[in-house]
Image 1 (cartoon, one colour):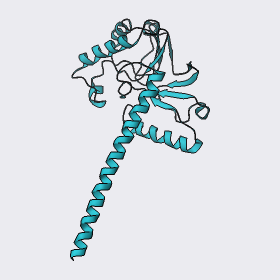
Image 2: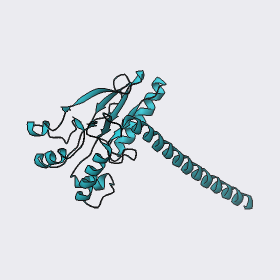
Image 3: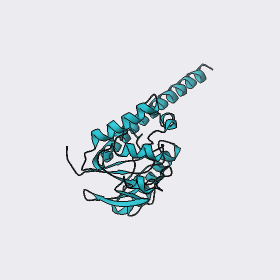
Image 4: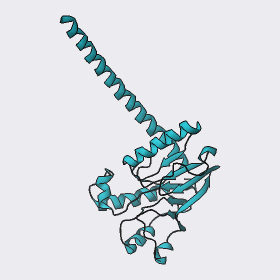
Length: 221
């Protein structure tokens, strides 16, 4: 496996029981989720890799969080979210860096990293990317996808903003490379569009059937 890669993930929510239900996570209890999060991380991340965590990493006390961080592969940079508590040097020392916002270069691409989505992110019309979290799969994520489409219509250029929340199908509770995120999102979006088209075709068929039935009733009358 290649070394010194950059990987990304948001909203890990280690030890957060309510997130199992909120995100419909595939776990029966918190222990199962916690163990799997660590296992998936270490299976995907090499010691020389850098992982950018875009906020909301833990829902446990500092001592427990430090014990987990000591088990994880890679150099971890935390872009703080609304649930991160980083007021103590003991936990901050476990991260390579702790910040609220970051711009990085990855394979020739510039990427804006923030826990919170920024529809009008820096240089979006010059080909920069934006990775974010916070919104999970809620209606706010749908709003961001709608904003993305509006930005593309306005500027007639791609708006490359991606939700890298752990629960997203193309993230799968595993830190992912830029290439994995972009290709995974494209597949997921394509599948969603196919399902939408199938549903719309089904609805059109039902409407046509109803119209035909109504027309025959009129002829009989």
